[in-house]
Image (cartoon, rainbow, N blue to C red; front, side):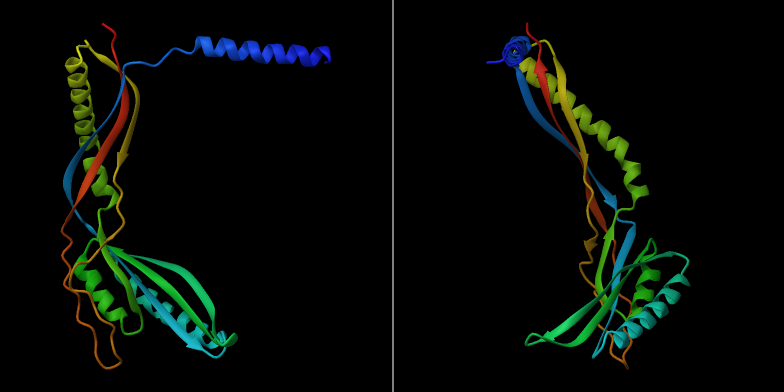
Length: 231
């Protein structure tokens, strides 16, 4: 065996042996979880509507969807308290026995507002040409931030108290934190439980939905690992 290869092998074995001896055995470690919760007011209503059309070629339904969406965006932007965002635009072939028989085009519109009455009225008007995909409520980022620090402090205090209780119960004078993770719940918009609006017909406008934002639970969870003092 060539000398350089022998030296490299000896170095590898020596390094592994040194590392194994230098690693301190891990004893007296305990994993634990704690959390803190509070009810937070939902202050943001989110709705997604869509325009859809079909035709024998791609151009006609695309033009129809573009016109409907332009009408809807213009109407939505006239409401200062509503945030407007267009979403994915899709054009898909419609098949019949393996052959293309036409095209389906659709595009979505996302609306959000703190004023549920204003948004409810707007959605009812938009259903003259658009269809409702979903309506849900959620906690805004500003509202979430108001509770974040207080809940984090409460969860950390519970973690410390429980860690000390475990240490004392096992006859130890104290502990040190080895690892800690802090997570906060971020929920998707919750569906409106009642008052959903039905699709409008050509001669029948849809009445505004009855929407109650309500509350939802915000949670800060902590999981970590402590090492108990050696007495």
